[in-house]
Amino acid sequence: MEAKAKARFVRVTPQKARRVVDLVRGKGAGEAVATLKFAPQAAGETVLKVVESAIANARQTAARDNERFDESALYVAEAFVDEGPTMKRFRPRAQGRAGRILKRTSHITVVVATREPAGAKATTKGGTR
Image (cartoon, rainbow, N blue to C red; front, side, top):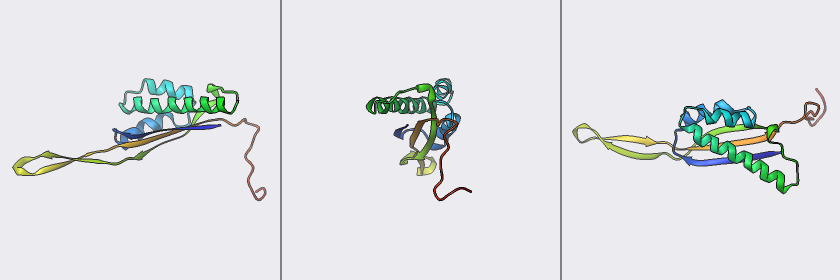
């Protein structure tokens, strides 16, 4: 089972958000939440909300499909940050000039999934190698 959550137009630069997302990629869902709660970066709060939203989406998907839900089996399968639109602002500078200020935004996406059992292997199409 797989569930996704997105936060779009977040007012944090993509470079700073990627530092936080890199902390939780591949970790278990519970461990990711615990890590983000104590992350000192400002983007940690937003990424935490997205991870918790993805977990809640997985819970709702399981309830809708009448499947058993085990939060401890979830892990962060994918987590990435894309660049959103950049707001352009101007600040007065010396001698009548204007300095350009770029206020960057991010789109944060997190996908949580359940780990496949160790015995189940993915089969490839077209034979064995």
